[in-house]
Every structure is written in C-alpha cells, then in structure tokens.
Image: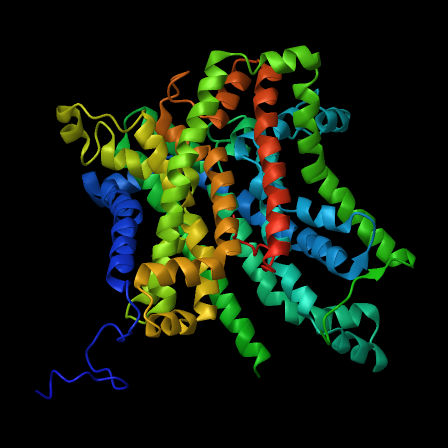
Amino acid sequence: MVALAPTYGARPLAWREPSPLPGFHLAFGFTLLYVSAIILLPLAALIARPWEHGLDGFLTAILQPRTLAALKLSFVAATMAALVNVVLGLLIAWVLTRYEFPGRRVVDALVDLPFALPTAVAGIALASLYSPNGWIGGLLEPLGIKVAYTPLGVFVALLAVGLPFVVRSVQPVLQDLDAGYEEAAKTLGATAPQSFWRVVMPALAPALITGFALAFARGAGEYGSVIFIAGNMPGVSEIAPLVIVTRLEQYDYAGAASVGVAMLGLSLVALLVTNAAQVALAKRGGR
Amino acid sequence: MIGTVAPRRIESGGPAVLALAALAWLALLIGAPMATVFVQALSKGLGAFLDAFKEPDGLAAIRLTLLVAVIAVPLNAAFGLAAAWSIAKFNFRGKALLLTLIDLPLSLSPVVSGLVWVLLFGARGWFGPMLEAGGIKIIFAVPGILLGTILVTVPLVARELIPLMAEQGADEELAATTLGSGGWTTFRRVTIPNVRWALLHGVLLSNARAMGEFGAVSVLSGHIRGLTETLPLHVEALYNDYDFVGAFASASLLAGLAIVTLVAKTALERAGHLAAAKGSAF
C-alpha cells in the first residue's frame, strides 16, 4: 500500500519525474526510435567495421602513406584556417557590432552565406576564381603563387567555410560586453591596446575558442568546397574524406570505415583539448 | 539596455581602416565566389544560360532535389518536435546523453554521413546481402540519398526547439491540461504557437542544407544521370564535363536558394525576436 502511493517530491528509483502532462511516452518513444535508426545504428556500423582484420587491419589502413598524408592535410589545413578565422572573424564581428556604416545589416546577413551556400557551388566558384586563368588566380600567377590544385587551395576553401562559425560565436558576446568596462579602463589611463588585451580579450576568449573549435571541426571533415580546388593529387593535395570515397569505390569497406573512425577519433581529441582549454580559462578567470 | 554596446558612426581613421579591412576580406572570401557563379553562368549570354534548364537530366536533378527535401524536412521537423516535447517538458535520466547523440551528426564529415549507410546497406554491408535477396536497392538509389540527407539534417530543427521550449517551461501546457484540454489540443493550440518562429527557422535551415547537401549524397548516389543525381551532384557532373556554363547555371539556382534562405532567415529572426544564428546553426 505504501509502496504504491505516489511519491511527489522525493523520487527514489524512478528514472522519470512524474508529470501530469500527457504525451511523454509517444514523443519519447518516437524520439528514441528515430535516434536509434538514424544515428545509433549507422554509428555502430561505422565503429564495428574497421576491426575485420583485427587491430592490424585498422593500423595498416590508417598508416598507409597516402592515408596519413590525407589525414595530415585535412587536420593541419583545418587548424591553420581556423586560426586565421579567429583573427579575421573577430575583426569582422568587431566592425559589425561597434561601427555604424551604410549596408551594415546586409553585410551582417551575408556573413552566413557560407552556411547557406551548397558546398559544391562554393567549390566550383573557388576553383574557377583561383585557377591560373581566374580572376584571383590570374593576379597571383605572375607572383609565382599557385592556389588552385595545391594544398594552399584546401586552406583557402576552408577559410571561406569556417569564417561564419567564428563571427557568429563572438558577435553575441561582443554585443553584450558592457561598454562601461572599456570606459573605466580608459578613465583609469589604459591605452586602447591595453584595454583591448586586458579587458575585451579575456571576456571574448571562451567564444573565440568555441568559434575555433566549430570552424576546425567543419574544416577537418569538409568535402564539397575543397575537392574542386584541391586537385586531389594523392599524397599532396588529397583530403581525408576523399580517401574514404576512393576506398568505397574499391569496395574496401573496412578501409573506408578505418579512415572514418580515425577522423572521428581525431575530432574527438580536438574537442577534448578545446574543452580543457575552456576549463583552464574559466579557472584562471575565477581566481 | 544598460551596458550593451550601440554601434557608433565611424569618425576617425583607425576604425575606418578596420572597417575597410573587414569588408575587403568579406568581399574576397564571400563576395567574389558569389559573383563568379552568376558571371560564369551568364558568360555565354542569357540564351545559353536558359538552355541549361531545358536539359532533361537537369530537370530530373531538380525534381529529385525537391523530392528529397519534401520527405526529409517534414520527418526531421516531426522528430524535432517530438524530441523537444520529451526533453524540454519532462525530466528524466539520460537527458544529457540523448542531447549529445542528437548533436552528433553535426560533427561528422558529410562523407562519413554517407559512408555509414553504405556500411549498413551496401553490397558488402551488414544488411546488403539480405536486401539483395529481397531485390531491394537502397545504396546507389533514391532511398540511400534520402537516408544520407536525413542524417545530415537531423539535429537542425531539434536544436532550435529544445532550448526555446526548455526556457518556456511547461506551465502553459499544464494550465491547459488542468482546464481539461487534451494532449493534442494543448500541443496544437499552446505549444506550436509558442514556438512557431523557431520551428520555421529550423525548417528553413534544414531545407537549405537538404537541398544543397553534397558529400553524403555523393557517396550514396551512384551518379546515374537523370535517375540518382541531385542538383548539387548535377553541378559536379557538368563541371567535370567542362560544361562550365551549364554547371554555373545550375549552381546559380542553388546560390539563389541560399540568398532566399538568408533573406527569409533574417526576416524570421526579426519577426520572432530570435537570437541570430549561433556558430553551429547550420
């Protein structure tokens, strides 16, 4: 009798807090079914596949020079592009929040274009711009700089793809940053650079790290906007996702899954590092 | 709004230099590629541009792209509503894990989002032989394209709704229930009106991503012209055939979709007072 009484407030072993609202079982059931079918089952297939020939099979697939070079290119180019985007994304967010100029709202909306533009469209446009007879490629050619069909092309494509992540991460923080702090720093005799580095930057750092992480994650896995401009020379300008495509074309499922798992693992490590950086930063701030 | 920063007019040299640098960078990175699409599409005149849309394979690609979006977007919207209803209005254990799983597809490479379905349903996949025996084709056919698109876009509506509905709480729904309203009526008359702008916002972003998806679909399509080519894949095929006018003409359609999406998105954000897209919105 006692055990059957409803126990509002104290909830001993129930996995769900009771609620008079209906529809939980239907909504939760559908959610669970959908997540299992669309996310969990495919992910299980990915994680289970590389071990067909044991750990050796996985390592052989990953440590092949061509695969290693592709993984290195994808992750190094993504890191460098995200770093540049942190600087220029901050600049753009700063200009958009601090200054009034004609067309500011239009420019603000345009920042999202790389999000909205299909990657294949960005890909062929960049390839045509930076090819030796393109608008920009033609200007760089006499200087001896080749962008299209080189690793530099991968970097340029990732610059475009990653920019909105940094701008949109930093912008809200910059908008809500109390201008009073900067005023106070100025009144107390701080120079503009001092107030920027000592007052503005510490407040922005977490958002900048978030923006970096998002731009990096997107860049490391990017495919459509890169393959047209990269030239895809094995060992030189071939990116990791393309290695997966090539392996699949040869029906080497285990090999393709190995590269996929390696990419997932590397992204996870990067995520852990950026999270650790956030935690360290929060501790320093809370001193 | 004490403390927030109001943008100021540029009156001195320093800010002017910063603003010009920012605009120049945006013009180089975003403006130039966008302009290229339309200039190249029209480089042989309007006639050649329009001819690109008379080609049957191109029309088939447009039809398939629309079909995929018409199926994938409502499914993900229904999922987003169900997930947000259970996660935001109820308390249960394992919520954080469920949220992490829902976000997971955002950190997958599009190619991996295609690969996983090949591992399940491909000729050498887990269920491949079974499907083959039953004469069902998923990979290199429309169902595969659909699955890849759904996986890539699955979090987009849910992510818009969950934080908003969590913030709104369940008070209004509880009041309606107390007054004798049934579950579906409460959902239709109380919940949906409260989240309508965010829902539309999520649907808009899902649609843009679904119609423009390339990596996942490229792995799953088999590239059969007129049958399994979506518009982005058709752009690739034309480009690889050196039919640049055709490729950029088709691309201009997708670029137009991107512009319409951005305009609608800005309008929705203003109408619903939604926060502008955070870093990972798309």
